Length: 168
Image 1 (spheres, rainbow, N blue to C red):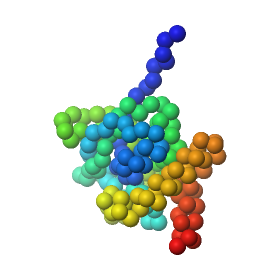
Image 2 (tube, rainbow, N blue to C red):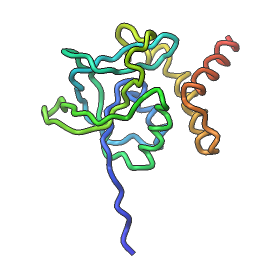
Image 3 (cartoon, one colour):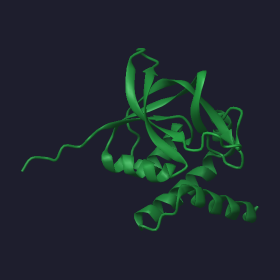
Image 4 (cartoon, rainbow, N blue to C red):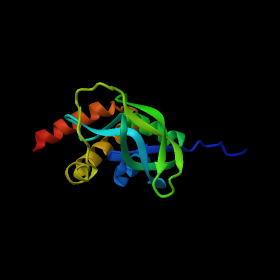
């Protein structure tokens, strides 16, 4: 019997998944990646959340990474993690090292008129202020997913951060 063909996907990441530590918790590995730009999109902060959203905006761009060689099961994990707040969308990104164009999936915010979107999201600030607690929340999400008891990430996020705030 031959091995079943495994589809390999490219996924453009631009927020918490820029952190290898978060990706490792979700996928049990850090896939090969390349720096990339997504043109005609903007990365927004979301009121009350520590992660960003992207939406199409002319004459703007979002810098990020393309995770390469993502398997179907790994793509399913990312779909569950990104939840219904995001729509997995095919986009074309430009690789920074070569300027080559590449097709990739990106998680685009579902609510295009969301009043909670504002300004710019800052990865460096996120790393300093939120990364550690976000990794703990992601570990809890994966434990629930493995037990087939996963809640939408928005609900996991809210219950984790409410509990975290109560402990302070």
